Image (tube, rainbow, N blue to C red):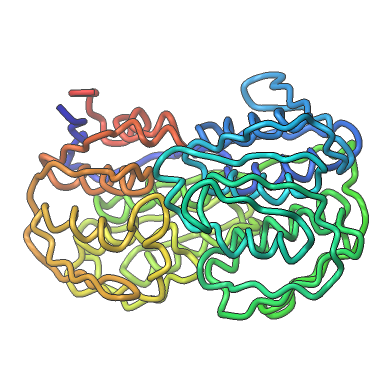
Length: 432
């Protein structure tokens, strides 16, 4: 039996603390690991992705000590990776796999990067080719361009590097973070339009916080990083995760009422905070200040559909799709064909599952069209994808009878998600 999502009819009124950002956390961990000395990171993102990153860095000789539930002390290795040959297992974490692949290329020993079955199917080829161009050796043990691979460094070639940008911005971020430790720095040119570009800006912001002032992102088509070192002794605070915040905010959108997420103020470095502007266009009221985001909707005002390119907020496609399924007019989501190669096929699998609820969904090469329809309960498959699971939870809170298979997949980024949703809805846990 799957997990039956708690259902309710009353508007939502809540202040919701969401987990710290895993995207920022993993970037801060890499910078701290490459620094020479101790760094404190406050606001540790929970979940499997963070555990995988800490485990991989530990295998490379980085000491990461969890001092309490919210803080870690990282003793960096100054960019000198001297660990014996080892396998770095990333589980299901694509960010971890790509970042540690680049970090491993700074060492002189062979390091194998691997992951669970779904991660082995995700594309890594452009990153592998870039590391070869930089002088590292990459040996594939499965399908070319996929895990598992063995990386043998050091990456030390000095040349302008060409990299496609239409598959994943994580390739760019991974190379940026090792840039200071390359002999000639990094001179990277993006050959195709960059998807999820705001994540590259996050990377640059985190690097600057660790003393790398000479990182430049030039109109999303080129990146330059001068040689140098990351500062140790940094006390870095990770802000709440804007992607996770989309779920309680979306709940207020579909149910009516008000949800506030503290900590995501005007100074947030995450592009996904702009999701609230889309919800505002659909009929919600939004207020952003220095303390956080508040979103409200009058239950008497219907949500309206929207035509939107989500190239820069692709993680939020499932969230917007479930909101759109409750709207009074058609929504067109475009620019996101590349998300077919995330944890799941986030276009095809999303369309298939939503159709089970009676939603009129039309899959497109680069997105999805959702028309108004009468929705009903259904058993939905997560396809090993935490974002599908959490989005389906929002839908189930307004459509009675939604049951989710493999609901525990949310442990990837928000282990307490279902407890939080039950608290928001005001229902007891059932069937899990």
